[in-house]
Length: 421
Image 1 (cartoon, rainbow, N blue to C red):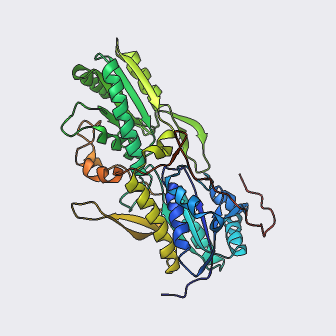
Image 2 (cartoon, rainbow, N blue to C red; image 1 turned 90 degrees about the vertical axis):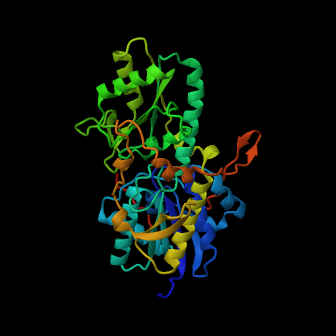
């Protein structure tokens, strides 16, 4: 093993938050305190954009109580961003900031685009001659990172949405009279993992349970087939509950509902599939009441329904990232590996960031039903272990309490840098 680098840690968060992203942050802080080669533990505010602006806080100054509370706190405690480094000087600025603060261990918690950023930072650091170990920590409710069996954040979003589907089912059973169509729009840009996961709301051997129809981005939408399926469901049920991914596409691959606005990575802003399907039903099926609901950001922030398994694995990913970096690993991402025994188990491994960056893992075709609007029961074996257990939340005056970082700023050492838009 090569000689350990002596210096500081810098950890940051990027992309859409999850209910357990801060568990990974807590894992990094907790494990970093165990290694003598690590002197200070810093956090970058608002992802890579904040690091470029030298917005750095002292995480070692946070109380142990606050660090523990991160494990049940949703949202990105450090702040996040959707910012793409475009120019060579932007990458150089990141390394200059790291060099100025003696950062020898860099951890980036995020999804596809974030892992691409981590990969490039690792390469630029080496080119510029700054010795620094860069490790990516997986995070995404979309569950679409390749190689890893699943992603921290996914189990919790499924647990929340499946619980919500059961609650809506109880409501609709009392309101419907074979004339109610309820459409629930969920996240999922190019992969239908989230929508598919809601099928765990069904009780075993109760095929009539909701969701009755599941629509995935992997399957081009067919309006006529959808309407026929709705009519079939309503013949046998008092209501029809549809779960639709926001990223549904037509037969030409175009989004059914997307604005012309693009983020810094060139992604269209999605939203409106539920309204589209509601209008489709209303305009084509007489005497049918159609309603749509968009769960929105609540699905990724629902700490009150987070999976304990998910939270523990997120924490483990943070810990293992630190161990890997201290042991000399660089340009890697922590990945989760499922055990091959009947009883669920999970371990970690390391994969090359270059093999993860900008690659999307879509929902497997063999788990999609023949009608293209249902999910095969075999999928339950994959998803059920990921939603087990409940995160214990402290309450005050009837409401959950969350961690709030003191955010003691670290003094800047460089001149101001103008970030390109």
